[in-house]
Image (cartoon, rainbow, N blue to C red):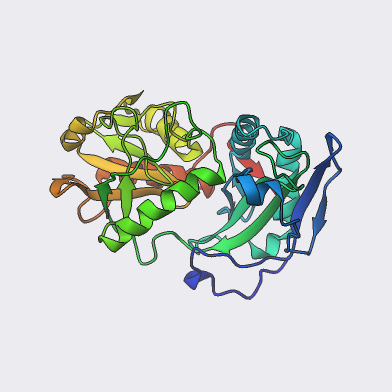
Length: 341
């Protein structure tokens, strides 16, 4: 299939409607067979559960064109597993894993001409999501739901090269202990919006959230996990029950250990330890790793020795290896790459 006539090199990270999307409805206790549709609009009752009580969850992954011309997705089974966990936590019906994978496959295949070509730096972003649809006025779970998948071509997160970030320690809390920080619920992101807008107004790129219980341990940002590198090249990532289990982070830790032979630790990271690290990055689907050059704690600056001008050496190796796996330049572990065509 011929690619769409799109200026791939100048794509931003924003929504652009593609031809088809997948829809399945849950009514009377079961999911229907699902279908592809050209209709991008969602029509809801004014009292729909999602509108009244934010009963909605989502996932995010990408499709790539590899060096040999295949269209692939990266570890979609883990997105399916995480969506199962999210649904259970918000008392929503589980959309079965195999159906999730099939829905993603169908949607990407139907929009294959929107998958950017290899070498463009762009990709096809995939957004599976689910929400309560029937009227709910009392505080309770909805009875009916809709599961959808749409796609949109997006450009590289860093246009014109990687720019190290300056972040601040936030006075706001992202998620409470025993709350919903470990699932991908829309309400978590709504809570972070005031904090990120305020950070931008103050001249910062992102927020560093500390644990809400003690405000002594590093957790994550509004949309990415932290990854640190010690001065002796050990890779360290925070561990907490209120951190979203990032698929990118999990993959980077595997790459660090199995491909690069580095020591890896997933543990509590006291904020007091941050000044001892050599490198810091934010990891997630959008950028894989975003290097952090400076962390500001209420006027006190922590400058990372590596990362003020560009990615640190270990962060760069992690980035190059994982993106090499995603793009087919480096052999992937079994099961990581799902071929669309």
